[in-house]
Length: 202
Ligand SMILES: Nc1nc2c(ncn2[C@@H]2O[C@H](COP(=O)(O)OP(=O)(O)OP(=O)(O)O)[C@@H](O)[C@H]2O)c(=O)[nH]1
Ligand SMILES: [Mg+2]
Image (cartoon, rainbow, N blue to C red):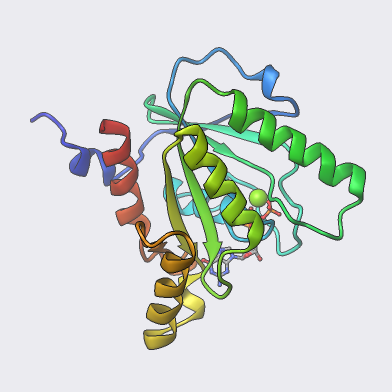
């Protein structure tokens, strides 16, 4: 039976770590479309990747912001490369380090021909910050597709969650509503795999 985006999305059976790079020019020559995971430091980028991969420890996470300092590349099922980016906006890091991260992230996002989709992660407890809105406006300007993803959805319930999602949608221009996810209880993870499969098929 041919696999539709929906059936192909349910599992990502073969995920492997490829390499960490400290400069976007060091990317290995692997001819696969890229999906990057972007967002503030500590928003839950690496944890979300572990949830998508169905693994506990493939991607390193930490309660301390600034855990991911390089671009970490993962190949999923021979179909795509997932790129875990360092977080932006970690004010306590030394200025020189912040600048290095910024150059690394921007160098990658601006220069990658293979980049097909950016997951823009937003903590459900906070609205989008200026740096998130700047990223979104830049992605729109460059014509790079992006999907908003609300992380840590286990932290808010019921009305508070719906209200926050609506506020986030409005702040981002009112077109795309963030998909609520939790790396802790797994909600939204299947739907996110499906949304990615649909984007990759389109
Ligand atoms: N409650 C809750 N906590 C989460 C969730 N996802 C991540 N966290 C916590 O948030 C903290 C940061 O998680 P990471 O996945 O390392 O965040 P990151 O965005 O990769 O951080 P940097 O690499 O520093 O930019 C850790 O303490 C995680 O346990 C979630 O879905 N729910
Ligand atoms: Mg990380």
